[in-house]
Image 1 (cartoon, one colour):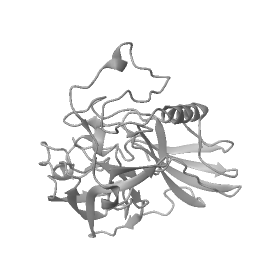
Image 2 (cartoon, rainbow, N blue to C red; image 1 turned 30 degrees about the vertical axis):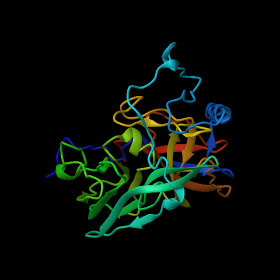
Image 3 (cartoon, rainbow, N blue to C red; image 1 turned 45 degrees about the vertical axis):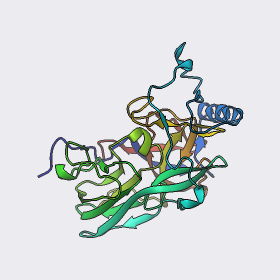
Image 4 (tube, one colour; image 1 turned 135 degrees about the vertical axis):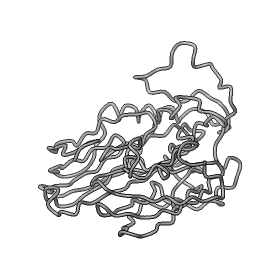
Length: 319
């Protein structure tokens, strides 16, 4: 039996699947998104200083802080992973890889600290299996697999399998379905894939820190019937995110509690598949099925394919 309290979206987490007849080229930001990026670069020109200190973060000018809030200091101390440590101690994060899993397979999944470069700056961030985003798990409908998870991020965590209908014990909710996985410890998850679609996995502890720093990945469940979707020339997976930074580096997180919304904050730098300059080329007349996942802690995205006709063929809780 599956627990009805678990997430039941067939394609969950603010995702859309689109079939796009691409005229020539790429995913383009909207003018509003470009304005935000320009503003972000302006903010990053501020004088250098200590990265681990509370400072006024860059703001989205469409959502300015309330009067008087800009001078407030959080009551908790600032935190950044790996602060003060030699960056060369950490392996550079690798791009996402696809892991094909058959019924009965086992995946070893490790959360660890990794080195990332964003906007010409290097940071200590987080990744699954040394990747940013984490590996995409791909399996057939009705497959059942095992994930042996190990935590090496120096703070407790869990893995939540967003959208999957699975046994309650493996839903990854701390203090509800399992105890937190402490640093250096492991937990075994048993996953079921009863529904076709795109899903994603992420922590369910301090998402404001862990998810924001790169702990997320996709799960793509393929149909048994080859005719389930209309034919396309190819598929592409796009993971949309944002991150908050200035010239001094990442804006710190609250050490013992979130300092923005409970789930996190708006970023000022946009990321697609973990990078700021993601590009995808397509031939004229080619049909591409895009799988979009929004992993940002607070932001919704307006996605524009300039000049290309698009058709939404599925979204959350649909085919």
